[in-house]
Image (cartoon, rainbow, N blue to C red; front, side, top):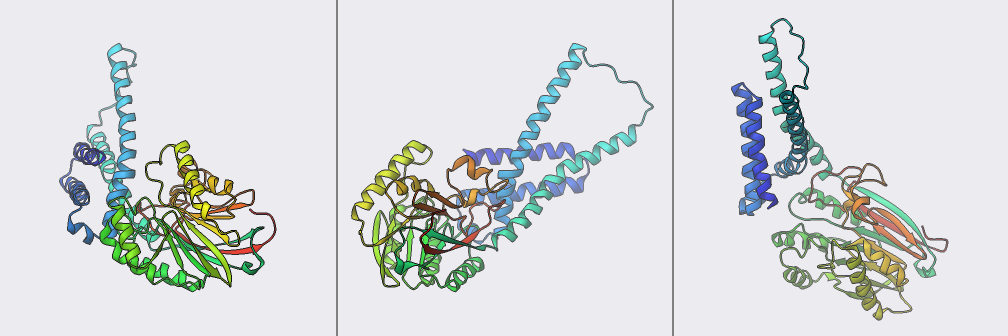
Length: 396
């Protein structure tokens, strides 16, 4: 349904742009822009094979145009229409006062109207192109974000333990090629004891899973690489995703745990499945997460240090209730569009959306993720997280 609305919006905007522009060259430019947007949109919607060869910059431009610019134009158009109705009503009722008659200036007035109309038609496409340039620069860059956590329950043998936390790679779509190789090299350069990946390995298409598996296999850690699934991973065929990842020899934890020796001491890595069907209802989310964590921790080894991996950060409440010292999650993309660290999309939709959170003796790290399914980030940069765990002190 939303795709149909996008296509209808393209047509509506083209009609408006034709009314605003009077000169043929500008009309041709606007028509070419709208036609290109609609063609690429239809290719992406239809998931044709050729869609995989469309440059990322073009895909970014289509997403920015349809999700940002057309929405803004719709609001502007609604406001303009409301003002037009008010003016018509005022004219009919005689409330509108007559303006003083001025000397005729037909040609300059027409020229001004043409200029304003042409600008109104050309600025949105030009703004789209500008934002696409910003998006492309963002899609090729990420940061290393470092945390040193003081953990009261950390055994002495694990003092100084390091974890490289990678999340939301979204392989395919907007994230592929060089940025993935750079992310792999940067992760390996950290020389962490553990590497963990907290979901959304692929964007959607299982055709991208081969590249994603190769990425995970190239990661290096002294005590292993562990992953959990995210909502994008299982959007097309969750069963096939899980089967292929496990068949490749990757350590995918599906409501399971594994004990691994880190610096000679046992660490129990817990991994949660994606909470299918629970999203959108916070109370239901919490009940599902609590049931998952309760069932999973029945197999807890009392002499091992626990680390919980989950895609959705809201499982932290259940993890803290269960007394798990460390939870790592992703999913939020740092809020994607934030005014600052506290306010924005993240704070509207999530209790925890980026960085460090603490409750009692439990701590949560939420990664902004390394990949994207939307091309623009605002105050939520892509990142790989490097954790160093220290013994003692008060969490947070």
